[in-house]
Every structure is written in C-alpha cells, then in structure tokens.
Length: 119
Image 1 (tube, one colour):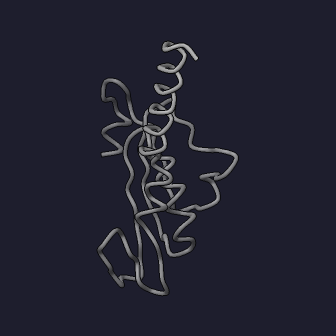
Image 2: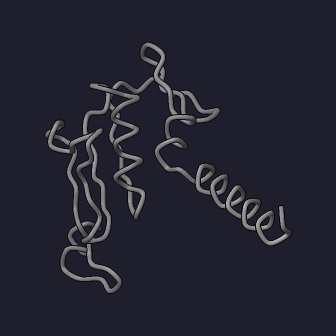
C-alpha cells in the first residue's frame, strides 16, 4: 500500500474515532442513569423525584432524546433550544411523544425574538 493511501486510511480512522468521542447522544447515555429513585449523573447522585432538563445548541435534540430514553417518565419536562434548521424529530425519537418537552428554534447566527423567548 502506498504511503498516501495509508495516510488517508489513518486519517479517516482518526476522524471517525473523533466523531464517536463527541457523540452527544452516547455521552448522555454514558453519563446518566436512573436506579430506582436515585438519579446518577457521572459521580453525582440525587434523589429528587422531579427531573427537568435544559439543552442548548446543535446537540440539544440528541441530548434531550437520549435523556428521555434513559429517564422515561421520570423526566417531567424540559426545554431544548437549537438553531432554526435543526431537526427535532428523527426516526428514533419524536419530540411530540412527550407534551412537557418544549423545543424552541432560536435565531442563528444572530439573535432574534425566538432567541429572547428561549432565554
């Protein structure tokens, strides 16, 4: 194999691994777990029964979707804010399945009325 082809292959492997490392959905699923009434987030444990969530940015949909999968009905409500072109519905998770999860498409790249509303 030529050096150029080898470099391309290694570059692609590095790129693919970097994408896996920053996968917001996988990150939430690794960091959050519910055991009975105990919510564990990384090394922190709480026993508050009502859980609300806020997610902001391009990964808001992925994070909120993963949180809903992990917490189920323990997730009482939440607000998820992302840019106007972000899709909030995927084949895996439809945001309309939980009426207490509100999504707001904010202005991007400049703030607008939706951005103020989201804040």
